Length: 83
Image (cartoon, rainbow, N blue to C red; front, side, top):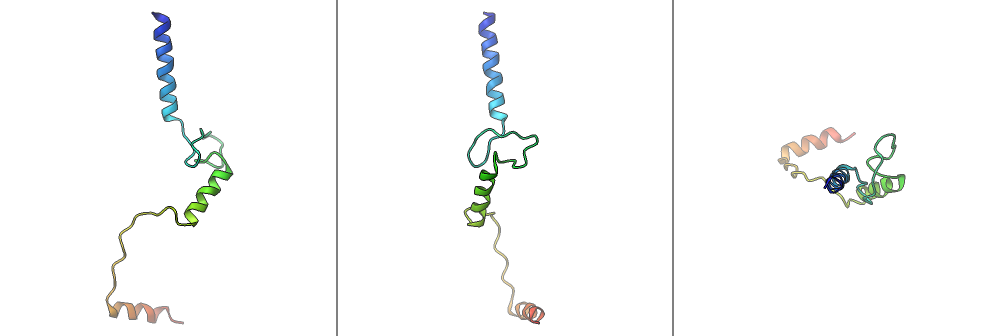
């Protein structure tokens, strides 16, 4: 019985470690967190792939639309911007 409980404990510990192990947001490989200049990514390649997705606007941050200013406020802003 003791061997079975040790195996279950080991299995449970492995599941916990697997659940909490950081994974690369791009490829899901395990990521070494300490002394990793690319974190949260596993490599420079995954970091650049993610950057490219942001640059291509594949990712977006949700936001409320800006309120439309009335005509008087728009002309004041335009006058201030002109050289």
